[in-house]
Amino acid sequence: MGYEEAGRDRSVEPSSGVPVAVLENVFDDPTHGEPGRDRIGVQLGWELVLLAALATVGWLLWQEDQNAVRADNLRALLVDAVGLGLLALAAGLSLRTSAPNLAVGPVAVATALHYAEQGDRGLPASVGPAVAVAALGGLVLALTVVVLHVPGWAASLAGAAGVVVFIERRSAPVLVQGDYDPGRSAGYLFAGFAAVAVLGGLFGAIRAIRRLVGRYRPIADPARRRGAVAAVVTGAALVFSTVLAALAGVLVAANHPGSATDPGSVAPTSGLDWTVLAIGVALLAGTSAYGRRGGVFGTLLAVSLVTVFQAYAPERGWTLSTWAVGGAALGVGLLVTRLVETFGRPRPGSTDRPEPVTDGTISAGWTMPQSQSVENWPPTLPTPAAPQPVDPWRDPRWEDSPRRWDADER
Image 1 (cartoon, rainbow, N blue to C red):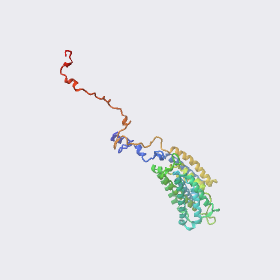
Image 2: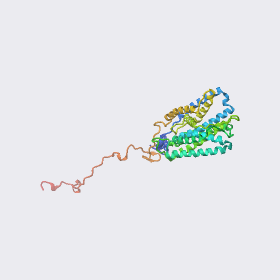
Image 3: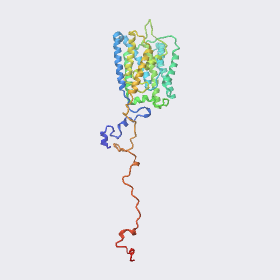
Image 4: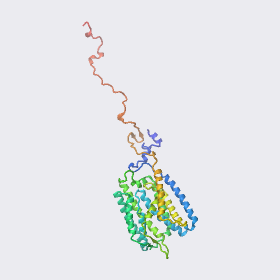
């Protein structure tokens, strides 16, 4: 095919004569997953369902009690959404890297207890050490997961057990000593959470970033190591998810300070119910339980839906624990995972694995297809037989007359 023909053919890059499918997959490593672009249409469709559900539950809450979404109640609702959103981001980030962090709930409760005890020292003095300890604990968890190459859920469950031991040292609820009121900046906090959630989803939809983040996801034997890049990305995700969980605990403790007659307090629970809720909301948002795949607006919509529902349930007289809400979200999220994995993978046959293009390439823009090896081409003409030696003295051109010495009369 010549240069002009290649330029007119959309399946071939004019400048190099290389098929476009090969250029699109040039950065795909077949050992790290299926080559081709993930389809996110299923996530966008599910996000429309979440949006419709949020509008319905919000309207029902407005019908039950309009004051629930006004003034101080609205600010408290927004801060609750940010606290749950940070936990969902922590769970979703670890899920995207295929190393779910089950310690996010206990870490949030432990940080809330620490803030309740030390809050009177000021926000930096009480929150700073808690965040530093959370980052250090996340680093230990990350090294355990990536160095030993063990499942993230198992290592984080062991870490959660250690955090629960710290929580159980308190036998009674702890009164909140700090005076920090996140409701005064509820709008800014929610806007910041929404921006982080949506921008994270947009970046996660980029093909290169999605593959980079999901590199730890096993594709064959799950016990095989996935390489240094996968280890670094997964380790960083575990550290950040632990820090996000700690910040969520501070907001949960500071959002309901109580009153002078009934001061707010933090109960020393295990926090595993918060882990179930966080993982459930992340899955409900469209994040795959297997890692790598996720949506764009799903986290923001799922967090808002669950928060509004938790405010609506008491208005109807329903008593629902965190375990119940988290279990329901987790159950629906598993169905969403099946949809995402079924309809979100690259389209079968749309892109093939990269094939070498050096054979048959004469120069840039000029290609010569080869149907078979050169060594096997049939010869154009038959090979002539070797010539026989000729006696020069018997050549007819030397005989001008009959050979007399051969005559009978000699």
